Length: 285
Image 1 (cartoon, rainbow, N blue to C red):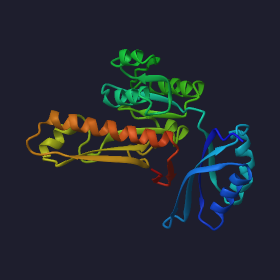
Image 2: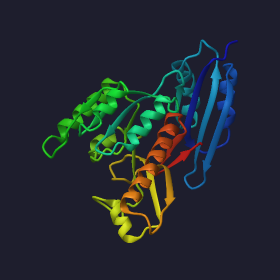
Image 3: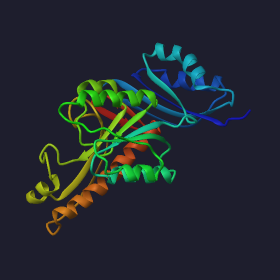
Image 4: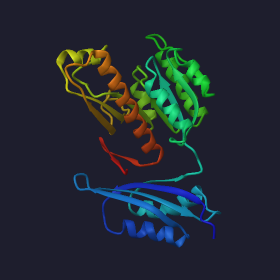
């Protein structure tokens, strides 16, 4: 029997006995083969997390698996999802005037390092329209000001729904999303920022860091929530710097860190390796 269809099952639920037994039994009974599996029990919250990558007979379907798994999910009060690896995630990119993260993600996608489709790139500036077009991706210019923020967010949400977007990536998009939009897209928006926050806010954070003589530069990728820059952290990175470096050098190093950290976070999300655990995340690397 052909085993050429692959799926990923992710779940979280109250930790108790029998979860892995029933999940593996469910897959065995349907002729599935577990390719890899990872689990974690959080003693502090009493929650259990599981990710199972498995292959299944050709005639299988995600819809059927989800329907049949519903009884087990209900028994253990699971938040469970089954993902078909034949269905490529659809990702919306958003950017403002710094393009290092966007450029890095577009290159990695073209090189086959990120399995995703990008229906559109949205920006409140036109700087990266040529970059978007060079990759054959539609570019949508949505300028945002004090008088049109609600209108533009409505257009953005319309785009998300029309294009069936699975993930929104804020690749240095320098506009704050409204609490209503954050709630509507909870768990499906990833942001990146330098890790100087909250010490060095506002313009020219690397110049501020240089003036204070910092020795470490970092970046944080996290899910977006209504609490600005305080959503569940997915990945972080740091690089050492020294007194001889100029603010421009610090910024260049910082941009490299931001690009790599965001790419990791996006990749792990696309591979269904990230499960939200309250204000934290479980990342099965």
